Image (cartoon, rainbow, N blue to C red):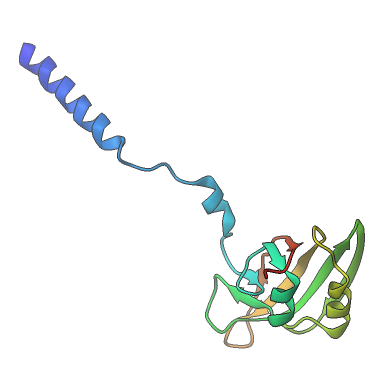
Length: 141
């Protein structure tokens, strides 16, 4: 009986020790990328973005699904000081009209893509594309 208690305590100690080396999942990292396709601009999926990055990378990308997938329609809400302007496009690039309005954005203003659809590489099948809000920050020096 004494040996059984020792063995039980030893096993519990070993299991407890092994569990202490397992890292807990990071809920923020898991929430960072959704399941399925997601929109990228300048290699970013939402968050901080500078105007320099926007104007260097006017083409919208899609990640999280088949390589070669391409956005073919979306709307964008530009929030400049609380005033929202909405634009629609039927391509995977920012239009001249959008870029002109984005030029007026200040630090802290934001924009968000909505109603985004992409064709898979076969050019027939479509997927919905997720997006997060982008916030304009000061251009890096």
